[in-house]
Image 1 (cartoon, rainbow, N blue to C red):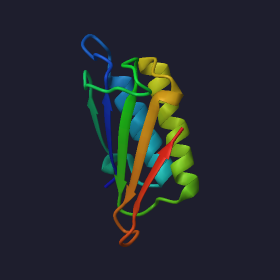
Image 2: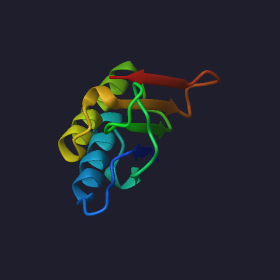
Image 3: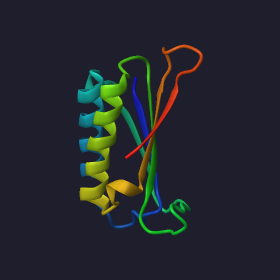
Amino acid sequence: MPCLYISTNVNLDGVDTDPIFSEATKAVATIIGKPEHFVMVILKGSVGISFNGNKEPAAYAEVVSMGGINREVKRNLISTLGTVLENRLSIPRARFFLKVYDTTAGQNNTSKSKL
């Protein structure tokens, strides 16, 4: 079951988050190759985040999956999820950081990527 956890310093009060959940779920399922009903998405707003020395809109996300992760998948996740956050929460793609973790990749299985 892939899990996407997104933390952002954007205040989500009054924001329709349903499109974020549906677009992120579809993106993770499609890119990793898992059924949508296995994908979990967690979205947390108003988190204290400073990036590049300022508190302008930014986001940190983690994807954890049992398999299905490779270099191309990572690139697609960064690009697609960055687009979702930019379109839905006005978070510039350059202020989005994604950590990808494959639980089946062995001892050294953490990969960090930045757009």
